[in-house]
Amino acid sequence: MLEALADLATRSDRQVLWLPFHRGQDTGLLQRLKAEGLVPEALAARSRECQVTSPSTPLLGPAQWRLVLEALADLATRSDRQVLWLPFHRGQDTGLLERLKAEGLVPEALAARSRECQVTSPEQAMEVFAGAGLVLAMRLHGLILAAQASAPCCALSYDPKVAAAALAIGCPCLDLEGPLPAAPALVAPWQAQLDRPLAPELIDAQRQAAQVHAAVLQRLLRFQGERT
Image (cartoon, rainbow, N blue to C red; front, side):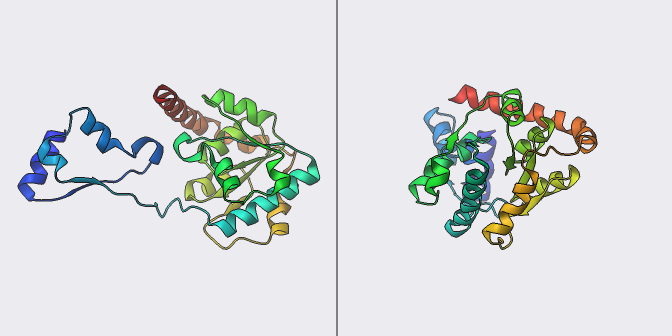
């Protein structure tokens, strides 16, 4: 495939940009292929990696993170709960708690109650969710598996797919792409859902679709586990 790409780039006299969409998996692919001797010289000379932030998955800015985390700290303190940070995409999500701490965005009350929790299969994730009083899900697979585990859920949506899944299962959803409300308004739906699982009939209607997502996630987690 790379020889064909080299031929096309040479004949058309074009540069080749390598754009990673999943930073944990794709970043550095060009260099890894070069190290393995798989990139023809003609292609290597025309290639470079290009980093972008996808407009479909914008990162929260410091002010937004601070607002969300203050609301979460308030909920955790008033309900006297521990907070587990469960990364679904290891390359992007793992270490998020520590990065936010390093930036001074995690309130002390939340930091004292927080720890990262690693899982390697959908079944393990569902075990964690089954014991949760509330799951705040930013990932589609996380939301679906939490619902399948009959866990109380709220969604934090940066992706239309997350918002659509939340609507389908009757789950409160906060749109992270729009202006965020003040902390009390953020906490209100989370407090209302605490310890209150979603309606079983809505979950049953999504069960078949969830099996497909679980299979995809299983393959993703297995692949990531092989690379670590």
